[in-house]
Length: 393
Ligand SMILES: *Cc1c(COP(=O)(O)O)cnc(C)c1O
Image 1 (cartoon, helix red, strand yellow):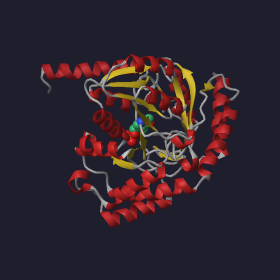
Image 2: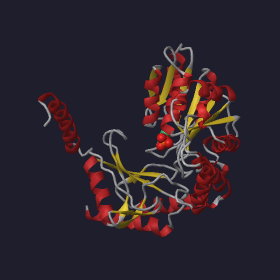
Image 3: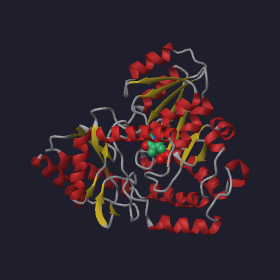
């Protein structure tokens, strides 16, 4: 039996949970019984899935599985310690060098996750008395990173560089940092990185790019958002994750040597945590090789993105204008988005409904994610199901 006071604590949580349920905001997890891919098995049923960030179809690639097994044989399973205390292995080091060379930046540093990389960078480079400027639609991990840093936080309306410029001009902070998603995770649009870099030049600010969704997908050989725009600047701090298009797990930051050395000394989410298993780095080296070599994966994405747009053209709901594999279909109300997601599921198709607070109120959507492993027929099947639902609603 819980005593009265403890019962109060739990009662309050129950109230909050019920409130979430009433607003159709309650989140539930699916349990996958298969590997990640365009076909996944949930509760014994097979689904055609448009949910994952595995844009290049590498998450269960046989070459990566073989590399992970080989990595386990070479390095064992656990890193056994943090990077600064014997957890830093040859595989981590080789991957950092490969990532620096792949991105064309002087030095790279691995983090366990993108969430941790963002927290580490922002708090290592800024503190009290400094100022951070952020796009309103940035990923939650960047917003949390700002809170940890204790710097002054200004947000500008999505992609509104006029407001950003006014904020930069008005600031007399010691150190200024502009942070932005390179590809916005819920909208799929791309930040105007060249213009942002110009502004940062003019107002002497750092520019941090979170290319979680662009790395492997954008630019020649998938080298990311900077080569996509043909820009490079020593004030850019580039972050990308390795669990999305790269198909494995982890993240890295690439920048000038002074920045990376500062992170090794000061980034708390780098220092006070166990290094990721080196076998993952071993697999990631293989993944980088495939990203670089297999252009057909990006060509395939371009092809099926065009097919999707055509298939969904007749719908009353509209796709946001996105040139990336993130294709959001805007529905509006939470329960309508949920209903559609559920109706697709009954038809054997998984597309997640994304609701506030992940997206703004009234902006609930179906977030369709495409992968190089999808076929034109897969996309046509999704199109037919949505057209049918549109007609019957
Ligand atoms: C997924 C994501 C992250 C977090 O990366 P993890 O490695 O999953 O922690 C950070 N930023 C953006 C924009 C993301 O989409």
